[in-house]
Image 1 (tube, rainbow, N blue to C red):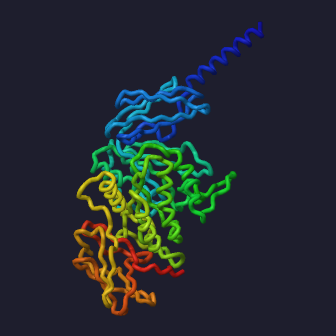
Image 2: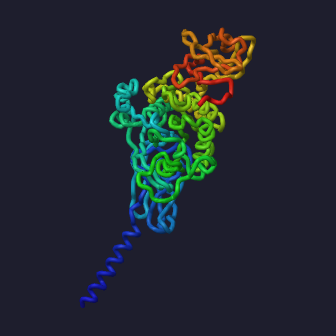
Image 3: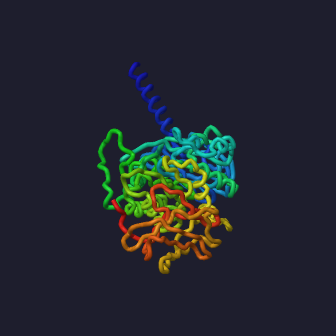
Length: 474
């Protein structure tokens, strides 16, 4: 009798277990949750975990369509849904027998925002380091058409499938804690385009660029040593590939329009390498995302007094300027006018963010009448003791806003630089120094810390530059 009872109980347990397996709860990565934003007018990927070999159905309320995919033997599944023009809110239902519903979903423009501390810096600022105008901006930030996602910091020697974080609505409480650079960028896009904006902030202060590149991408740079694949306590976020693995890989393939980037301070002593690493990161992300040459815009590091040790950071700014033209569909926002001598985190975050947004509005969204590029030297002519410079991206000319130009230096063949006089002409800028009879090179704002004073008439500053290629003094 007992044996019969035990047998029946065992059968019941197996049946219950089988039912639970058949209707196991769908598990989605953190980026798929309530309040999310999906990229408009595309085939947007959705993926997750389900029961072994289960059929997963995804239903979207904007078109009342149903999509299906079969999970693999390990439960992984992925499919794509067709997204409409911007709008919402909508709902998405995911089921393999038991339904999971995502609510308050918007369709719009999604941007990934990454880098080190100047991207991470929240609207509330850092300790003793404010964001100019943030109190008013936060107070006025209620906006149902902007959504914010902050990826929790993590490292990994292997690519991960998920990270921690969730989509939050745009309220003062949430904006206060969110990246200032990303928020101001998204806000300007939202106002100009009148569509929902989704911002994914995945950044970590003090980090170099190498940790943000995948293993396949980092192998293109022979001077970068890959880490050994063995357990490590307190894995450093400076280790190559570990931030890509933990903070980028889980969203690779997520539907988005493009990326913005603010990083470089931690690589300032290796400008030649950075000039290659920056385009390398862009190409690496584009390769793994598989959606073509999506736009990638970045902020040039601001002038700052790094002290007597190390290389003049103007060389890194020069490397960033060159990197901005080394790959298609990329651009750089120059902030030579807002650096701070004693703070590496400029308080005027809105300035750089808006310049990133100008790049996106003009180059990605094709809005006419928007100037977005800083002037760059087009031609250099030496006439006696004078050097005459002409510039691209200055169709309406240049301005110093009434101030005397004070950032130019001139050197002869002996490579000794002297402060120069400079004045704006109809064709550009003329530079000379009474101390240099036969000039060979001109440099502009080529110092660790300096406040740029040359702009085009659209208010975009000229980057620090030099007309020579002399090796930097150690």
